[in-house]
Image (cartoon, rainbow, N blue to C red):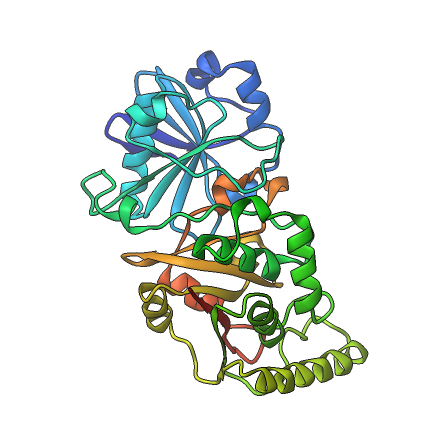
Length: 353
């Protein structure tokens, strides 16, 4: 479906059939990058200036409140501004821009540089940029200063999301020096937190409490039963459930609070406003298409959305750390994706300074 707005047109991205206008201005290396991944799950679109002088490939995770420029070509500044207009029309909170080719055009188009990841990856862009969409005026408004920016850390395995999120939280809170964040820290914390292989909420909270005793840690879990077990066969559930019982006993002995009340999204917002960082258990079905439990770090809010760090980066779908960093998710979408499994419970680990 084609969407035409003043000065530009938005068309679906078809890697096999590039429109004539962009075909004249897209460098071969950029086109090869655009075609290097199956981006179909991220609603890829071309934003093309009416006069054919500029274009941008944009993508976004489903269930989120941003759009990302992979590259802008030709008149990159005008193309990026057209993307901003497109995002405003969709009511999004933010536009990001991968730093492959952005250069000085990013600043000229009103984008600010993102903080570099804690551990660089040569296969991903070294830089990225963001433009918050504020109150509809097209600028950052107060949001650039309002959203404190942690440094992103990408989990190194399929199962260490909880540990990776906790490390990011503690690095932002000052309990971990950025230069000390590495795979050894991630895996050693996971080993203390695991329910084999996922991290259950109480065990994760206990691991954070023990590793950083100066941090105020509270587990929010509105069920007394075992969690994150629905995907296992019956024979693999009982021993994991027993381990979770033992973790609750250890938490009580260690003085770790386990709050059995339901953590609402307004309650989450209040915790973040009070300076806490919140590890929230979500399903990845809406964002990435598979219904598995996954820990994300909630660290800030903007009107209508909560800002996350997701330790998982879906590189097969063309994602980079730019997608997973400063990731805005609308309140209603976050509420839905954090109602877990058939029971609909909510699990979080709240970390204070």
